[in-house]
Image (cartoon, rainbow, N blue to C red):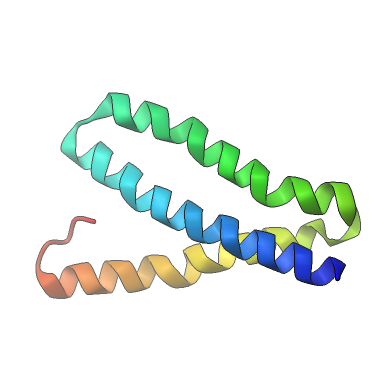
Length: 92
């Protein structure tokens, strides 16, 4: 049960982090610094929300939650980049 908690919270937070990363990159590339400044604390809150449940309930599995959090970003970022480059946009 603890392993499932670590993996599921990490994957969910990682998916949200990936989405927020694409929104942040769009904001930075368009020059919208106010939106980017708002998104940075939100990203940190999502990171904390993904790790705190595991930290409180199963601290020995915090490494697993961290790996699960990174997985959607590691897998998703190249896929998003490849699909955008095929479209010719190059910008997320």
